Every structure is written in C-alpha cells, then in structure tokens.
Image (cartoon, rainbow, N blue to C red; front, side, top):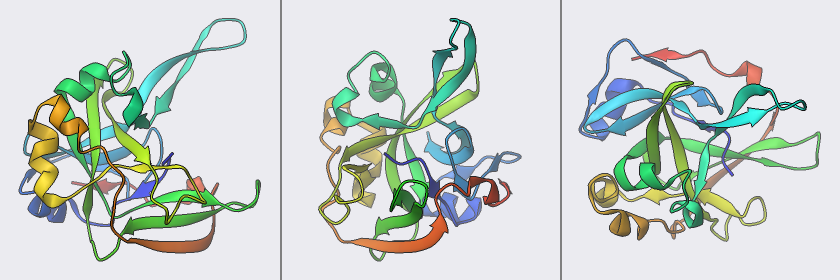
Length: 208
C-alpha cells in the first residue's frame, strides 16, 4: 500500500491543471506521509486536508491512544462500514507527481517511485470525510498492482484518466466503482538509494 507520495507542483499549477480554484492560507507538504497535509480537489476547489482516515486505537490497558491514519482504501472494501458513506457521497481527486514503495531487505529498504510514463501531475481516485480528530481527511483507493510493479507490491493507487475525472467525482457510486481498475499503461520507475525510513528529511510545507 502507498504510504508516501509527492506533489512537485505549485498550488496555482494544480488549480490550472484541474480547472479549479485554490484555497488561500492553507499549507501542504511536497512529500506526503500518513497524517501530513496534502492537496485534494473537491467541488472545484483545491484544498489541503490530512492524509488518512483516523481509526480509533487502544493501548495495552484498553485506554484510548492516538488514532491510526488509514491512508489506503482497498476497492474490495469500499462497501464496508468504514468507507461506504465516503465512497458513495464524497469522492475527490488527489493530485500527485509520483508515489513511492519500499524496496529491498528489511532495515535497508530504499524508495522506488512510480508514475504514469509521460505524465506530469496526475490524479489518483480518493475519498474524504470530516473527522473530529483532524478535521477534513482523505484516503486513496487501491487496486491490484500492474505487472510492472507486482514484484514490489501487490497493490497500487487508482490512476484516473483525465476524461474520467468528472465521472469519478460526479457519477453514481456504481459507475465510479467501475473506474477502480489497474492502470494499463507504462509506468515510469525511479529506483533510488534514498532510505525509506528517512521521513524526517521531508520537504517543508508549502503555502497555497
């Protein structure tokens, strides 16, 4: 599952690409980890939200502890209670320039980045909702991975073709579910030597 992605475009560029308006005064991260702020496109607006639906957690003695950020929604689980209402009523577009997966031996994993070949900013299918814990939050929808990355992970995000953006956000849940499919095109792959766990070195938040 994806737990790191990046967006290397200014909010104004994203707004132009998605024919939307950018909210002012919000911040987002260029490299987005669970619980960080990323940009999403909702109702014609480019907004910052927290990546990950909060899942209540309990400690060893049963006491409430910090919720877990659930960043990925499997397409075969979209009709379960945790995701159903958001998928049926609140779908969004997640602007992305690449997502990463860990590759290599435990303790020595590095980042391998993936993106549709020849694309700049592309859209991943997402869902969102309001939460008491973190305000507005979003999650990516995941499907079976393409053969090109199956040896690294068995799941990948739903990549939407430009002509399907409005169908994802505005069509019925049944029609949107039909868009939950493995990307058939070529992926650009960037296998780096950057440690997977070096998350504290992420870029500083950008301002919209």
